Length: 141
Ligand SMILES: Cc1cc2nc3c(=O)[nH]c(=O)nc-3n(C[C@H](O)[C@H](O)[C@H](O)COP(=O)(O)O)c2cc1C
Image 1 (cartoon, rainbow, N blue to C red):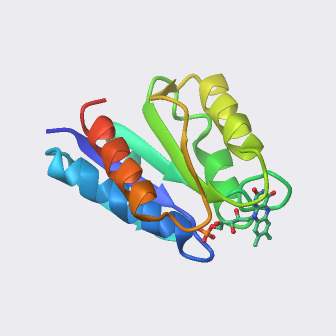
Image 2: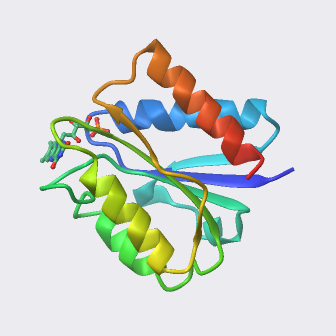
C-alpha cells in the first residue's frame, strides 16, 4: 500500500476542497493518506511514497508567501528522486504559477507525476470528480 502525504495551503477553502477530494480518491484506491495544512506538515512526510502539494495562485502567479513558499524552500534540497504531484485553485490567470512550480519541482530532481491539477475558483461536481480521479492516479504512482 502506498503512503501518500497531502500538504496544502488554502486561504479561502477552494484548494482545501481539492485536497479533501484528492485524499478521498487516493484512499478509495487503497493508499494510506495523511492530509495536513502546510503549517502542520508531519515531520516524516519526506518518507512518503508520494508527496502531494497544494497551493492556489497567489501574489502575481506565485505560491503563497508566508507559509507555502518558505516550506518549498525548505524541502527543495531534499526532494531529489521523490515522487511529487501538485494541485491548486486559481482565478484570473492562465496557470503560470503552476507551470513555474512544476519546473521548480523538476529542477530539484524530483519525479513529477503529471501536470499539476488546476481548477478555477471553487471546484464544482465535475471538478471534484477530477480531483478524485487525480487521487486515484496518485495512489498508483
Ligand atoms: C492575494 C491574492 C492573490 C491572487 N493572485 C492570483 C494570481 O496571480 N493569479 C490567479 O489566477 N489567481 C490569483 N488569485 C485568486 C486565487 O488563486 C483564487 O481565489 C483561489 O481560488 C484561492 O484559493 P483558496 O480558496 O484555496 O485560497 C489571488 C487571490 C488572492 C487573495
